[in-house]
Structures are given as structure tokens and as C-alpha cells.
Image 1 (cartoon, rainbow, N blue to C red):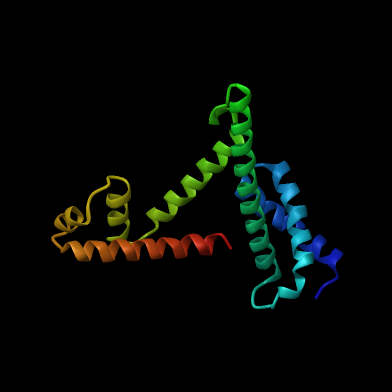
Image 2: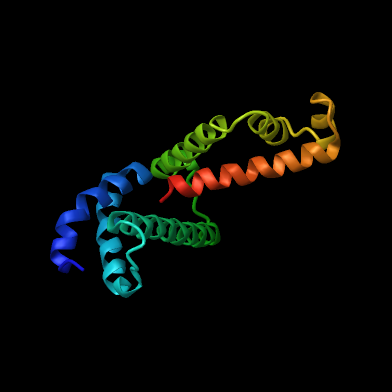
Length: 169
């Protein structure tokens, strides 16, 4: 295992770039990069060498970011409750541009992943989630059974989940 300072020097920029892509916020990415390496030092004994060290660090970075979002959600929720009790006007999501950027980027990336699915998975997934068609209606569109539509939708969800998990490494 490399010396910890060498590890940081070798991979900090890569982790920071990954976090910038994830968060769309340079300052937040820098802060999360520091936290990522702190977590890596704490858990270095768990690194088993089955993947590249950069992949392992990006996994830690991803989880660090998700923990940050959970914490922010709790803090925002608590702040809203406190503000309501005090009779203060509550800011809309428009007042929170970073949250909107993250939501928008997440939606765009998910939408891209959906469109990378092969047919009929893509169409069935979209018919079910976008138009809210029943499995019976989807089966009728494809001249198949309701059960076929159900199973194909389930498989589409699995394929999409695999794609998303692989991209987040």
C-alpha cells in the first residue's frame, strides 16, 4: 500500500473531478474530497485490492456525497420546521439552486440510462412509468399477455438498476 500522502497526491484530483461531476459544485466537491480521504484512511484495512484504488476511492466519495445529501435533507427539514414555528417565510426550491442542479443532473442521467435500454425494455419501462399504463394495457399494445408485460417491466428495472450501479462506481 502506498504512503497515505502519496495516495492523496496521486488520486485527489481524480476524486475531486468525480465529485464535481456528481455535485456540479466545485466548493462542495473540494470539501467532500477531504472527507473522502478521511474516510479512506479510517477504512484502509478494508481495501482488498480487488479493484483499482481509484475505483475504491470514488466509491467512498459517492457514499460520502450521499451521506452529505441525507444530512442536508435532515437539516433542511429541521430548519423548515423551526422556521414554520417561528412564523418565517419558507424559501422555495428556486432559492436553493444547488439542490435543483443536483436533481436536474440526476434526472438527466437517469433519463439517458433509460434510453440506453434495448427494446422492448425501454418502451415498456416508459409506458409504465411515464404514461402510467397498466400491465394489461401494455400487454395489449404488444399483443402479449399481462404477465409478459409484468415480467418484461421487472427485467427492464433490473437492467436499469445494473446500469446505474455500474455508472456510480
